[in-house]
Structures are given as structure tokens and as C-alpha cells.
Length: 203
Image 1 (cartoon, rainbow, N blue to C red):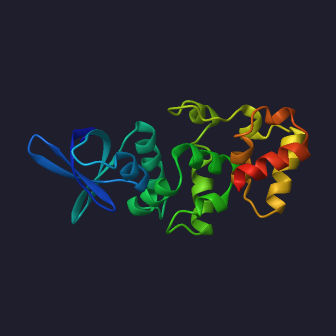
Image 2: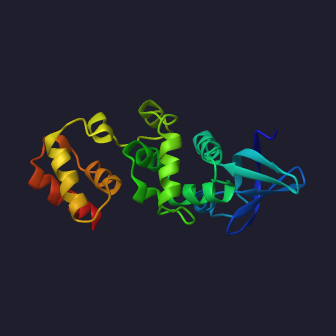
Image 3: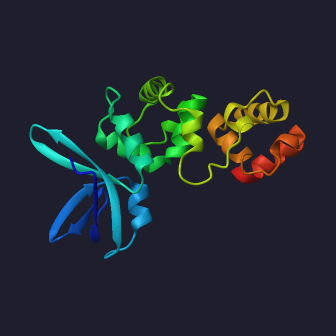
């Protein structure tokens, strides 16, 4: 199996890129987020890869981080979720956002991905809720910007009330928590103040 491909970007397309290594051009399928991050020809990249083997085709999938690759492999292990749908999910949500959505049971957030309906999102949450853990979210590359109260909602009345208010206004719990976690010292604010601050983040 090819663990990773390191080389120069020689082609950027809607669903894949071409990476040249020692005179060989590897066609590597990847997410829209990865393509947007690369966004430059003749740039040297290192992509962690997964080789998908079918009777009539060998396809190589690649990602900039191990976390993305591992999440991709978790997604395609779910019945009914193939590589294309997994890429669609990782194009719509970052690994951290997907983990948050699964932990919160937020179907609406996952259905933002093309090709994923309500039943598919519910299946993803059911399959991954025991595989994605809070400690794993904290270990993801970069600061998640989330604390224990935010991820678990930890019974904090101010945060709970604000989430409920935002949900009643039509936002998903995922969107509500994401907005709240952009507000410094959210736990110490009164619900009314926190709600106004969160709405500013959402507009």
C-alpha cells in the first residue's frame, strides 16, 4: 500500500489533483477543502493516501493530514458510504466540525454535504458516535477552540438557554455551539448578552 505521495502538483481538477513524483504522475482524488488549500500549480505537497481497490479500478485518495485520512477511512467503513460521498462530507465539513456534529447528533450539519440525506446522516452519527471521542477531537491538529462546557454543554444554564434560543430561531445546535465558541468567556455571560453576541457571529 502507498502510505503517502510527495511530489509536485502538475494538475488541479474538480475532484482530483495530479502529483508528479520521479517522473510518474499520480492521480489523487481528494476533498474540495484540500484542493482549495493547495490552490497552486508546481507546489510541493505531501498527501497521505488510501488505495481503493475494485474489480475494475484502482483509485488513490489523498489528504494533507493523517486526521483527514483516518476520518475518510472511518466514513467509507459505513455501509452505504462510498469514497465519493466521504469526499463530499469532507468537502463540506472539516474533521473537527464533523466530529462535533457526530457528538452532538446534529443531522442538519451533516446533510450539508452533497449526496447525504437525513437517513444517511443519522447512520453516520450512529456508526461514528462510539468511534469519535472528545479526547480525539482535542488531539486534532490546531486549536479546536472548544472547551468541555461547549462540547458537552455541561449543564451550563447560560449556554443551554442560548442554544435553545438559537435553535428556536431556526439554527442547528451545531451552528449555535460553533457561534458560542467564538465568544470569549461565553460561560460567564448572561443568556441575553450571550444570545446577542452569538447572533452577531451568525449574521
